[in-house]
Amino acid sequence: MSANDTRMTKGERAELLSLVRKRERVMKSMAAERSAQMLAEFEAQAAAAYSFNDDAVWAAAQREAADAVRQAAEMVAKRCEALGIPKEFAPTLNLSWYGRGENAFVQRMAELRRAAKKRIEAMEAQAVASIERLALEAQTTLLAHGIDTDAAQAFLAKTQEDMVTFMPSLVIADVEQMLVSSARRRMSPDDRTYDPSANRLN
Image (cartoon, rainbow, N blue to C red):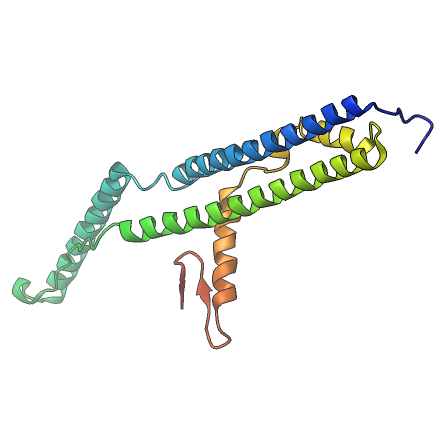
């Protein structure tokens, strides 16, 4: 105990203990609120990153593909004519639109959401554990020494910080990398290569 320590009365100590416990409960509630906020932030990031999944974008892609096929068909027809191949025997080109990858997109978004949710849950658990540890240190020291301890003051100062300090925002690129790393860990030694862009084994 240093010369600067100030002995507290029983009432003052009880008041500070009560404040520490209240702040602990508030911080835990804030951690849960922060989790919901982080998930909403991530959803917004994902929507921006995958903004190509739009009817107008896919329609433009289909038009461009159709133009390319038409031009290629004209070139084939001219070449066949030059080679003396009758029209009835000349090959033709057609555009087959097998879908716009919507199933793959939905699956990808579901995987990202699951990974983000899992990461956020882990961050919340870690934040709650830190809050509980700080609160326990403060309460233990107060009860043991009955003084206005550094541990109590450190806890109260820490709980005044923004919850972002405990739970920083996710970045979609990091979550995507988590998916790639997770897939690689699941691969057996006999597996060949993993294509992150296609999210499949080659």
